[in-house]
Image (cartoon, rainbow, N blue to C red; front, side, top):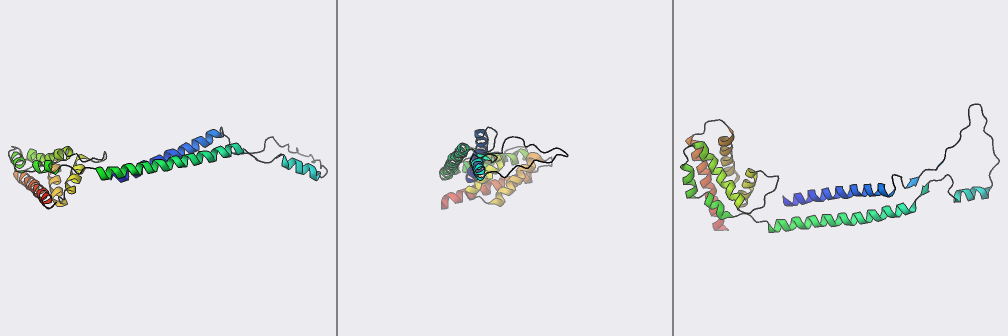
Length: 227
């Protein structure tokens, strides 16, 4: 996930550098293109006028006129050189930015903690389940089961993506410790129903949530023993 963010940063850096290139190229030309059209207005004969034919030009005069660039597009080689230099510099900067982003993402992936499993074991242990069962209202008990997992996941030290919700982050932490998806799906569904719906939450809902909580605890303990 962190690598995907790095690629997004690299793409944004590329877009910024490309935009900077366009602005700098435009600025060096002061609003003009690199190739300028010939200057001056040509006079066209009026209605009924017969254009006067001039004698054939002397070859030497034609050669001299062409060499002077009279009537030909003029290329500003100074601006061409500046543009090429800017392209080279911005290409180097872009390559450095992309390389720097990749190295940072690689480091984050290697150093990212996976969370504190002991906190999760404590949050789903026998004492925690007893506190849930002691809740007078089944709705509050079901909500407490999931909130206990969220709190333990947040305190575990695992890096959270800004785009993740608290529930998504909790699921990712637990699956990192080999907790299966069906157990999490059931507990999360019970939590959403108790928290956001107006349906009656019965002791049966509470017992199912506590059973899912116990299953999470057993899976965490098994992963610790085999790991």
